[in-house]
Length: 234
Ligand code: ADE
Image (cartoon, rainbow, N blue to C red; front, side, top):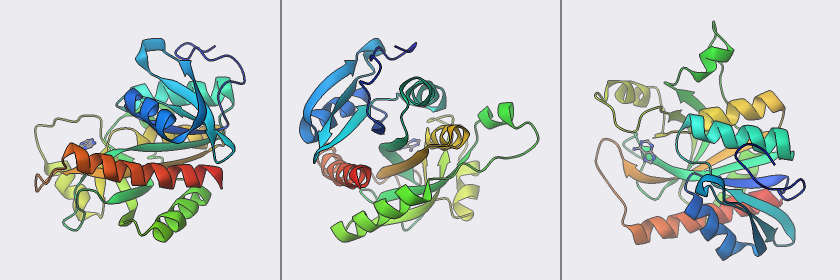
């Protein structure tokens, strides 16, 4: 047991999918995993372990934002020995040629959070995806014919903001999309020498206001989960 996860030793697989929404964790477990068993209900942050095509896989909700995902990723790695962590989430597009339902593979995650300055007071650490996982996910997505983009994203501390100036500036530097967690996932994976990747579907566009219906979101979400699960078992 850890502070926020009630699983017993050995109940969590070495490879895990990490949706922000705990009900997505339930959906993934019930839809895709065989013999899925719940291992966590603490704070409603559901976690399950089952098998996918014969390989043991877990799926754990992380909540929204850097502080929340940091708690789960720390405990999964330190207390349960998790080695491969694949975040599956949504993001807001910030480039003109990024559209809702596109899939984004996050190569690096810039942030406006001060969290890494607590660790590295005088430098800006560059949180980066694991190349092996990134390469696998890209090849799998290509074979599936998914509309995909690979590049840098922003992990923002705030969903609602007074000004769009920073977002416009980052778009000018090629940043593809904004979400709220990956910088922490990649930094912790680097710290503990494990593998991490974030796969996102574009749910909205920050500048054009382009949006998805819930039915469209479901369909793209399923495509992303298939890429993530196939990456996880290879
Ligand atoms: N996740 C999905 N859309 C987002 C947005 N517009 N900003 C931050 N996180 C998001």
